[in-house]
Figure 1: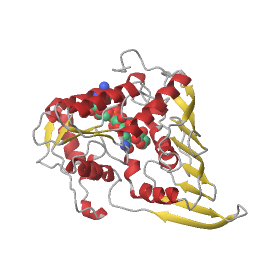
Figure 2 (figure 1 turned 90 degrees about the vertical axis):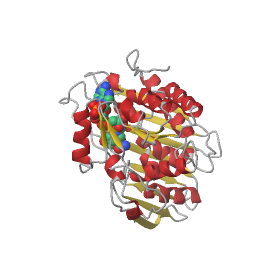
Figure 3 (figure 1 turned 180 degrees about the horizontal axis):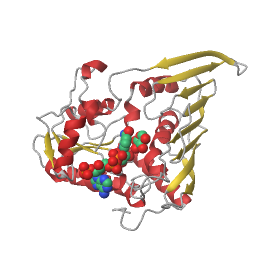
Length: 349
Ligand SMILES: NC(=O)C1=CN([C@@H]2O[C@H](COP(=O)(O)OP(=O)(O)OC[C@H]3O[C@@H](n4cnc5c(N)ncnc54)[C@H](OP(=O)(O)O)[C@@H]3O)[C@@H](O)[C@H]2O)C=CC1
Ligand SMILES: O=C1OC[C@@H](O)[C@H](O)[C@H]1O
């Protein structure tokens, strides 16, 4: 089961949104009882929501416009493809697929079927991120020089079953695919999207330490050099499944200042901007706080609704190009780190 649904119940007016609204029409599960249980426990028992015992029934329901895919990573490709073939728009959880080839195949199918498709990179749409982007891109801090970002989580890997999605290689287990999208989204926002970079791809170096429990990546770090444009900047990114997250989780240094993003970096509630004087000493510090009703997943849902209303097939803020870059980076880091998914798991290679 996914996690965007409870946020869809929040009145959009609480976040000053008046132009779009959301309605949960159906919940699909491999078990109808589980679908009904989710409706009862997470969606207030709303009798108007249909409980289906298969995903196909959701894809084929005439009242459904958009499918939210929130199965384990290695099922995103086939679930999204089935939805697209049924002519439904798709919001698919991160990481969007197991590899870049699967994503390209999905994007081809979305184009052929004239369907909107977006990876659920919810962090990109939060008000904090929009405010961060204004400051970062304005030039008031000068050019960005480096991004240090980490997302780790202690999943108690010695005590959870090997079949847990975080440990099972068949489900794309490990740190990179699950947690890696979040340090990466900050590097993409600060560096890839920086006006001076002009959407130029970085060079990629990755290192992986695997857990002997199942062989998935336990501690992964990757660096991205953005130096083929007017920018000369480096992102140093990391993720682990056996330790807690750093706080602040993201530090971005610029020629004339620093921005520190509070943990958790997937839904931060504050950041600090430090302005340096001409001697490099701290001249001024500003802290910005963000509050809203809900967990913060509704902002991406608003984007999906607006794009579909306006006939768009992709979001500008989290475009297909950015998801493709993400998968290119993850493929390369897994290659350099020697983490191969079991044969047959990747449906397109
Ligand atoms: N944006 C965010 O903050 C978050 C995003 N995620 C993303 O959402 C996805 C799902 O994560 P999470 O909910 O923790 O995962 P779970 O392991 O809890 O699986 C979610 C559901 O997927 C269904 N499912 C379908 N096929 C399988 C299978 N072979 N094995 C196990 N479950 C299967 C099950 O539903 P059923 O039996 O009802 O069909 C299950 O309840 C991941 O890709 C993750 O990256 C996760 C957490 C937070
Ligand atoms: O998307 C996510 O965000 C929070 C993490 O704890 C979780 O494992 C991940 O899937």
